[in-house]
Image (cartoon, rainbow, N blue to C red):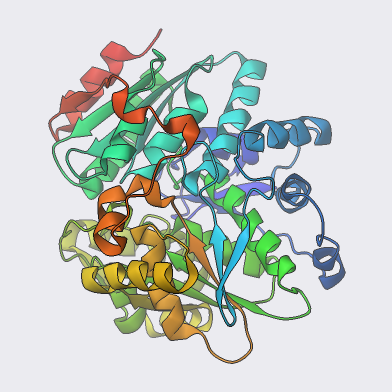
Length: 463
């Protein structure tokens, strides 16, 4: 299995090389050269298997000869042994043909754990074998950072620096990043928004002198291994509802497009997905782009679903690469227009292809709160505000006999103020995290300045 850049100019890499590289040297994102497919019989055979067994079957074709079967099975087992539910990603029924996929039973109570726990084990295995040391730098709107720190804290051969927007994540999200005591992890509060943090990370990857001097690696959803790990729960949930013998649809609350792009890969692999519905909050650039064809930045307004407060959805580039017939030059031109002009227009042909797979909707702040309140009253299920965005949009899209699965992306206790405002009840943290508010914090506040951030990383990293 080989990996190519969405902008067509970077070297073709193996799975392990693409994983350790993160962002391609031409600024693009790595994607598989080909997408392996499963037959209907192979998909049906997944029924009744453990999450770990399904994960091995789905991901194995993508990793080539990076790990033996025995090594890869052991990596998967270690990645998910710390999850708080035996099913890893259980389904809960909300109503007729509407199901909630709970993705918050991992160590940091968010769906990012599915990918980050796996990628932590993959990195550790690869670096132990090579003897190399890397510096991981990531940007987060809340959940990616805590999941990355949890996955890499205390590991050998890795330093981790996570940039998050100062004052724009929940207290639980912040404390999950700032309370680990291991010396190899560093939380950096940037004076800016998430897009500023994400831009700084991309600029660091494009600063080749800095990149090479610190052994830069990335674990944001720009890293293909992150997307790959998330493909698995589309299969487990769909099969439990009757796939491949009937179609299913998914609604995904998303800001950076990575989680729903994993669903697109599952569909390409043969999973009978009818619709993939993009659910956005008031920062609705993806909904506007899929509705009008214009991907135009319009500023970020802070919301009660802060992990979706994004205007530059990095993984959308992967989808554009496919609907532009894998023309790297065309994608590079669009990304240059986004950088220089603040937006671009998607061609008519590409829009038609996007419309064959994706639908979209948005939820206002008031609608998000109302959905949390109504869902709690009718089902007893407590939604975080991101999951509520998904449920609201999903209810507008459910039709016929096709089951709709909405991804519940975070535990409600990560956003207690929003949940309490909607339900009157404050969701408690799980017992293993009950003392989170009492732990000492350790963070560095930095200006939104690339040189200052790079200097701090050089100073703090282990040599």
